[in-house]
Image 1 (cartoon, rainbow, N blue to C red):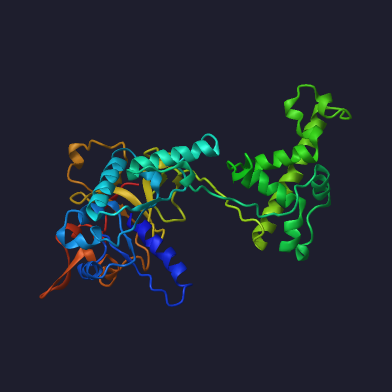
Image 2 (tube, one colour):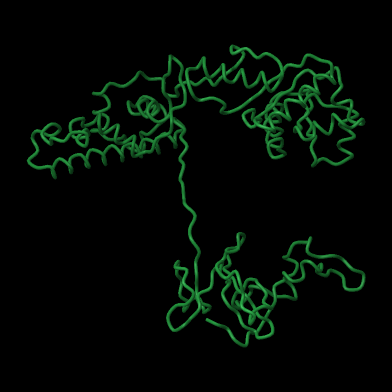
Length: 418
């Protein structure tokens, strides 16, 4: 919630910076502000107070914040991210709003903002759903015509291209890079087609955002326009329907693939052109699945074996240890169990839930081989968090008891299994 408030303050200040000598003041009132700052706000309330519902509940119960909730100057209540107030949380906030209205004694003007609340049905039906939710939350009647939804305009103003124009533009290819200007992009037949295929659609005379599709899906649609006979091939069982002059199904398949590749390449170039000239903004999403664990033998980087397979040992009875990596610098560490008495290091594996009595007194931790410049216990403790240490009169900066065991240690192992 505080992150949202910080973002709101930044955006509001952008507007106010464009208004010379403005009298409007903005202040944040959250758990992050100091007592001095809060006292200053209580004594001199701003025009816009940025807070959250948890703080509002405290303000309604503390007498020294009475000015902020019982002020006759309180005119507006704005809730951002309205779609998040549902279930028990929504009920709690609804009660807070009614308490606030009772305390201030004013007929507040309620405003709720949300990126997504209803996507099903017609525009009228969506507005009705939003109005019903807002009415329950604010405790006042919200009419559907008071719901302001998103208004979109096409970036490309040229007329919708004909099929002939689209085919000719694909056959001719894109202009030379020196001619890839904003004006030429806006007048290109494919620009309008791309915007209405990937970005917008007309519903009941009202432009709305289109459900995202992949670049490959768009290329298939374009190929169906560029070469409709071959592009529709997969939908027909009889090869002669879509390629009467073809001598074999293989030739038809190759023709289909060629048309698709041409259209895919043209679309990629068009998106890059639009991005460079800011003629058509687009957002590209890439989804990367999480990788599995990495295992390695404890040897020098040149000799060690790396594998994604989670077996316990490898050739010559060498043990495989799980690897983890520092989020800051990328340094790799072996995840180990260390027996200080016997100076034995074994892999720490998630399946090893029950340790045998032989290894009952073990210490779990991370191990890395000695590398020049990696760690110097005499000087590098300054790199550790200050919260790990305390200042004493005799010894100066010393580690706290709870964190001492986490300090890196230089050890010489008598027996290294691996």
